[in-house]
Image (tube, rainbow, N blue to C red; front, top):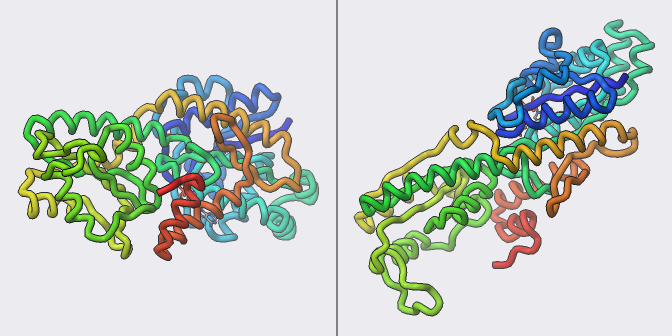
Length: 377
Ligand code: ADP
């Protein structure tokens, strides 16, 4: 019987439990044995009680739970070969040769490195006498399948990552609450949302709440944006056919600005919530407050979309494990135009890193092109 393990790694995201549930139950339904590795790569390196057999009922009620019930961690040991050697030993001793990893690009990169080193790690363990020749030959390959769990929706090659829509839903609720109080006092609010390298949450939150301004890492505003922002907030546009009369002069009582954590200007200088607040206060005398949403964006139950996405992708991950051959590169389970798909994992990671590289080099058009090739200014 094939033994398939599932783990969550990196930042937690709502829907990870639904993914674990789906992998466990699909594995069992396919006649395999399911295992969970607790505490991410730390559990793999430690072995023992961190590697647990999972039964059908062990994941009962996990669909809606936020966070990850099998724990996650950042693990320095796994970034070094010695740590991965220990991880390999624990997998072989538990008879596991397939690993479904739900995490961000860091976790999935680690998984792919682990797979590529696998024959060498096993040879070394045999030489050290930690595993037998027989064990070495019956675990020749390690199957790795990636599921992307990330609230930031920051992975290339997939339209949505597990957790992103739950987080977006939470942000929308929070901004709706803020709207009411902002309106009451005619205030401005600068809302900081997560997203160090990816502005998806900020952009989509702006769309869903009708925010006035949005600041992102990938698309910095034009120079002198401060002046333009102030002009828009206080005046009536002279040409109402292109822009309806706007903001305070037209009786608008609130201003909402959404700032991604990683928002920058064209010189890569951070645009912080404090900086935006200071402009609104100093230039416009607007009563302005900052709300940093922080970890409420991460916690809480998974929204319907994430439950569905995680369940369908978890099922696909097990299918990918059972169909994998050594010549197929590690797949990442994606969703493209509403279809669950498999993409080469490392291509997706490379593209994701390329966006960050473009931003670092001030190639913002390049960053937007990688994010969305059909995007037009
Ligand atoms: P995320 O998966 O959310 O991007 P991290 O980048 O923190 O989060 O990665 C999570 C864990 O994955 C790290 O703590 C480390 O154990 C492992 N990892 C990340 N990058 C690598 C790498 N290049 N090689 C091996 N392991 C890695």
